[in-house]
Image 1 (cartoon, one colour):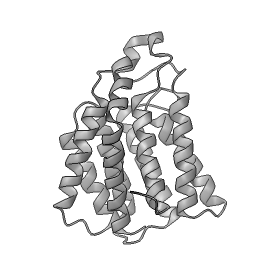
Image 2 (cartoon, one colour):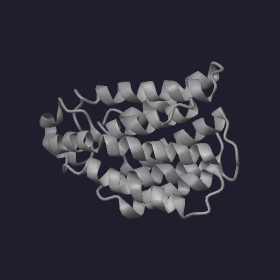
Image 3 (cartoon, rainbow, N blue to C red):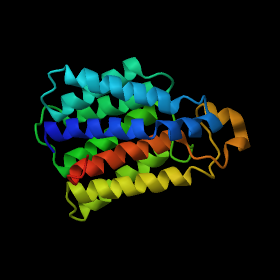
Length: 211
């Protein structure tokens, strides 16, 4: 994937987040502050605008620019978390101009590690990581089996979608939802759901199917 592909990924993320902003906000209203969709839509729109005006000429610089935009313009906890994820992924890519499957896998792992460190969360806590963790694992397994970028990102997207469904019966241990105790059970995590959308966008671009 070259720089234009990464720009396309960000554009597709922006489109999907805007399309599903209402759903994300409804999920967050049940166990959070009710602003996840609104905040992410604003954040990614701002990140796209920042990217349009930036001289981001490598995949890494595209992601770090997006990360800065999310941190500065997204409200709530999702701005720092997603901003850190994109910035760490961008840093891991360095100055390469064309990203192969193995390097993209390392970037996704860097994003996971960045969120885990900032949020002090783990898989099973009913957070973003419950979609991103399985996605990273599935991606790496696909690459180890000889899968190309399209196959690996498709596997990641499918795993993220399963992961977000599996947050439903979980007890929230981190974030605003954790204050609800057992009342958090029965609701899918909005962060895991938006993460699944971000990975769906990546798979679409890698397969050449993004609109």
